[in-house]
Image (cartoon, rainbow, N blue to C red; front, side, top):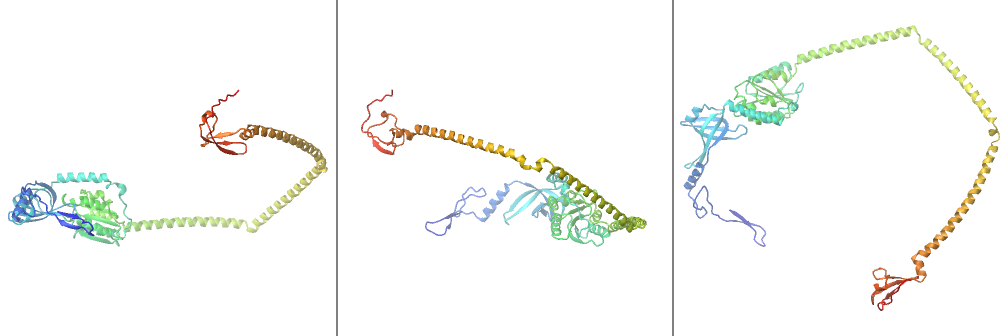
Amino acid sequence: MYQSYVQSNTTAPTAVYQPQRSSILGMTAPNSEENPVPVRQAAQLLRDYLGRLGNIWVEGQVAELRRRRRLAYLTLRDTDAEFSIPVVVGLDRLDGSGVDTGNRVVVDLKLEYWSNSGQLQWRARQLQPLGEGALMRQLAALKKTLAAEGLFAEDRKRPLPFVPRRVGLICGRRAAAHDDVVTNAQRRWPTMEFALREVAVQGVNCVPEVIAALSELEAIPDVDVIVITRGGGSFEDLLGFSNESLLRAVSGSATPVVSAIGHEEDNPLLDLVADVRASTPTAAGKLIVPDAQSEKSKLEEVKRRLARTFLAQLKSQQTTLAHAKDRLDRVSPEQLLSGRRLDIAETLRRVQRFTVNQLVTEQTQFRVLRQRPVLARPEEMLRPRLEELGTHQISLRRATAVGLADRHRDLIASSARLAALSPQGTLDRGYAVVRRQDGSLITDAADVTAAEPFTVRVRDGSFAAKVAETPQIDFKEE
């Protein structure tokens, strides 16, 4: 073990090796630098230690299988990750199991150590292919999990573009599915281009190669849709397209994905995760692009409808124009203007007559008003009001003078009462206010002590004093 320490007044720590005794691999004697074990004993101890470990059941896929005399050497690959281990199995156990390359298996493994060579190896004690029943149960459990996470939800599926700029195609090497998709798509839209990625569509390399191809096609800017396709096959051949890693990669794809795996009766989980499912590769080719001839026919029909509508509108406008022309021919513009001039002249005459009549009426009403006495001598109407106003002014002045005199007498009386009741008035009459040093009043001779200082306030100011002796006289009020 290493222990760090810092000496006093030093600038850097120093690491010092401190040997410790240890007991490893079940050794009874202590082991240390002074008491090491030989290499052969260490190997034997490791072998004994591993021999006490139990077995472990492992699920994987047989990626490689080689037979040598009485033994077989196989590579067992993880189905969801790029990881594998070598395994040794007896030919008698292998041949009796029916396992071959590409099969998914469950293996009872035991870790062994060869002390002569110093090598570790996994040995298979039991080996059996993973049956369809077990696989179906695993797929059902995975399907339930992914459904609960919403990977199959319809609201997350995206529509395909009407005409993609380019189609990404993931298929097997020299596969018929490639021709089915490309031929049918280009038959419908001859100029459609494809970005092709050929991968393993079954076996141990299927999942990683399809995921890698999906990532490459997503990185191409003009690839607007990706098709993952392969022909039909056995249940085990199509297992790669129900792999959880692949399904999650498709779910996270930013580009819409079409699943076209196998035939109509094949239902890998990829069909549920993909944005669109095609029952066959041929159907996928028809789904990803529209039929150019059909679209052309639709355009021609739209053109014909537009032409018919335009001609009908044109004919209607021509008819309306002809009717307007007939009306103009029957009634000339000069006649119309002459009628309008007569109407305007009559209107002007009516306005003039109304204006004259209104002016005469207003003049008559004004003369009537001028003849009223009030308007003839308006000063006669104001004289009584002026006299009444003078009387009110005199009364107001008298009332104001009387009120002010009463208020002045009240003020003098209140001032006299205030002076009689104020503390200053009391002091003016010869009384004094006596306070202790803390400001409290002294109201009783018994409350003071000899030599106690105090302050006396009189009419003109205050002065300090001190008690010479305690008062003994008892004053009583009569």
